[in-house]
Picture 1 (cartoon, helix red, strand yellow):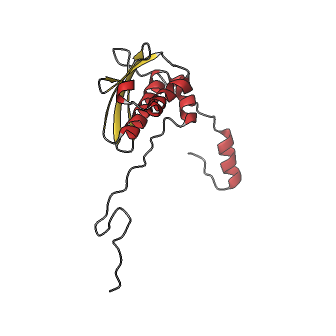
Picture 2: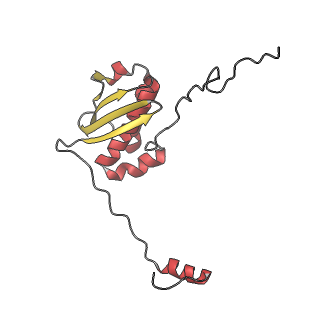
Picture 3: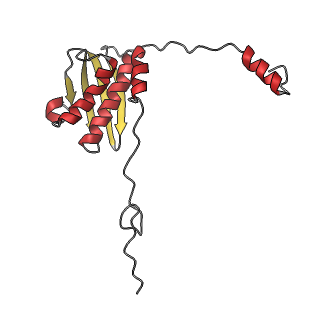
Length: 160
């Protein structure tokens, strides 16, 4: 900056005089096969997710979604990004997921699907972000500490 800012009025003049810089429009990110790829995480589970236009088939670790995630609640979690973005039965999903339990794995696949959807079609980002699907749920189990019964619980105290 060539001119000095010595007062609040100078600062306000500089702030009001600067033009707003618009963000560059996001470009779709796709590989040579027309797929978008993203990683999703929740708790200790990590999912690698590929989406491509198709009939809505979801494959997790080489199995059908209804076989891998037998509970209807977990299947509903996987369908949430598509229902929010209005793209039900438009994309085929292929996911590999490791670590954690079934609930964490379902959350990780959901996170990966959401990230891949917004990479495939950047116009869906607003709806997915407003629903909170692009935020990684970082809550993990606290580790057990030395000298403690569990992560925070102490051994039973004995006065004598």
